[in-house]
Length: 398
Image (cartoon, rainbow, N blue to C red; front, side, top):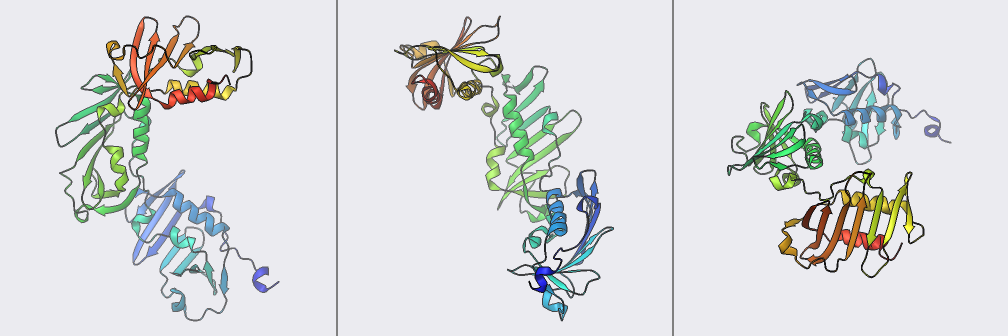
């Protein structure tokens, strides 16, 4: 073996978990980040949330990474971009490293107190900050989706609506419609996950914050966040009270632009998957399939045979999430269910009325559905793929 093979190739010895503060000197600017609990905060040059994932990945790679090449008699430091260094990284109560130029093969570095220069993997160049904003948290919206009580959308046209959480769930105002809490929750989590591509001073974005194409107000119990969506050469998000603006991906525009119908509650099966104890599936000119839940599993009672438990559970989850595409009056669907393509009867816990779902003729982009629960009936258009799922799972007696 050569000397390189026998040599300790660790970069520097320290425990990443014990690091509480890091300082970076970069082109005359100082970036200082500090760990507070499990999170990282930028202290200099401004107090903002720091990018925990990026900082901790850098620390892990420094502690566990390996040197690609040693230069024990390095010669002039200018060769490696280390006189002066391009970046100086100081780990409080730990090592200090100088980083030089990055090339295709890797990035040059030197640990303070050592003579040799080392070549590290190029991935280090991607983790080190190239500017102040590189180590900022790219997800600055601070609201907690689970604590939001009201969301208001306001457009320049004057159209405005709100989703409001009350004791009985979410409602859409002023329409007074029942809202789907799952859809609202999904929207809020996606909104919180919008990543900032670039932090810019207001004057450099080339847009007027007073002319948004959407005003979005998010309110919690005590806090509120006022956001404005703006368009210029790119898509921007402005948070009221900030001295900067966020450039975001153009694809995120679709997430923001909502109408009341996007949040409307459209599910048509009024029971939960766990409440169903019996399931009957009837196709025309075929024997009815009768499934009974015994313990935690489904048993095929008629005709006798085996049933794959996951198919029943999967179908029930599909049914619970089933939404209508369009709603009809009874007279608009006359004859559409004679004969039906399939009829499903869901019987819940004792004392609760059964639900009967009948799928009839195809129409346009979907298939007509009738829902009966007790004396109540409803008529809808649903996606055709539900019918295909039922046929695939149970249409040939499987």
